[in-house]
Length: 466
Image (cartoon, rainbow, N blue to C red; front, side, top):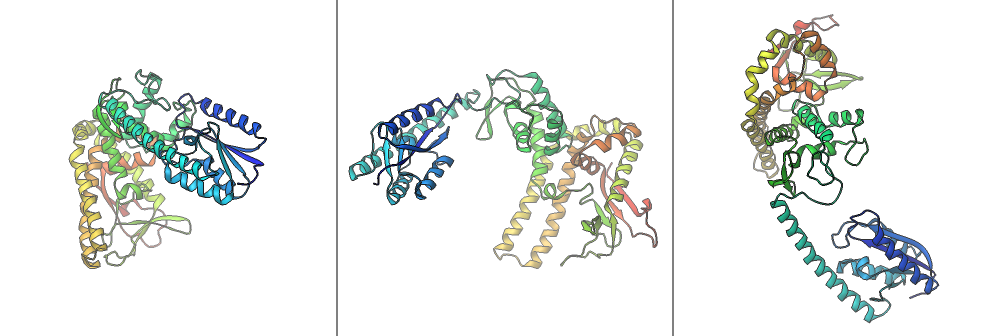
């Protein structure tokens, strides 16, 4: 090994429960003392706090130290103990290779290794293997204990406190519980996760960490957790009744999950970016209209594709037909009497499961057809014909599920026409779509009369469900 002029200190601790980094600080202090005793200049300190060396997780500063060693910026590495450096034999071998190639000395405060000779390497390898075995046994014990705690309904420990509960993870924090109930209610009624995240940020609602910075995944994690329904989750699945009060009922959570699967588990949920996607038909050939954008103007268009019967001869301005749809929905609700309609269909809200099962089955058929095409079990002609039937089944299943859940989207709206018109503008796209799909089976768009520029409402024929 070469003369050490520039030394690197590496420090790590697997779990820092207090968040104060005291364990790492003690390692650094002892390594600095050893460097001073050897007249080594500390060129850099590389710290990975609260990261296990056994789990295989990336350690950013460990990786940065290796880069600096390979670049020749480091002459020696100081570490408190070998197991602070690594607990994985394969990783130790890589570290030895890097240091050997760069002629870098490695020393520990505890004196357990020195990689400058064969005996030191042998001891290091034995120590690393023993540390890996102990980590494996410890990991198995911890996993078994975590499962046992979950089966007993005990709250999980560590990390940030769960939103809706105090630091003891059992006592409900009522101000946050009200927010969770509002989120669940609004999502079931049709609002999207992204709209809910925007709402929380607009209202300056702090997270459990104390900052008003909400993201879609944060909202989703709260709503799908069993905790808010008084259930103990383990690896994302509820396995026992929790020893804390529920914020929403188990039935409400099932309703949440049903709506979530219906939206997130279908192709329509990913592609429906506009109010009337999938709900307009060509008045000339009966084909479904698709969204197109030409010269910055968005339209719903009958688009010809290989293998279908679309005529490709009709289109309508998207903004105009969506404005028509909004006005038509309000008039329809006013004419039918929204309050009585909701009352007559309320029982449908509790019959989600059969509809969801049909959606998932139809989706599975589409997947299986694609796999059969890829395996050469179907020709493209056979695939196109089978897919057309499967897509019709899928769309019908989604429509029935929308009708079963969609009446939720209208709860809380004022049934008077003027108030409904004002409310419509404030609803997010997903909730507007839920209302439209609940009421409208589809609408037929007929050709525009020659020379006419403005939208003629008689061009559109609505086929109402209710």
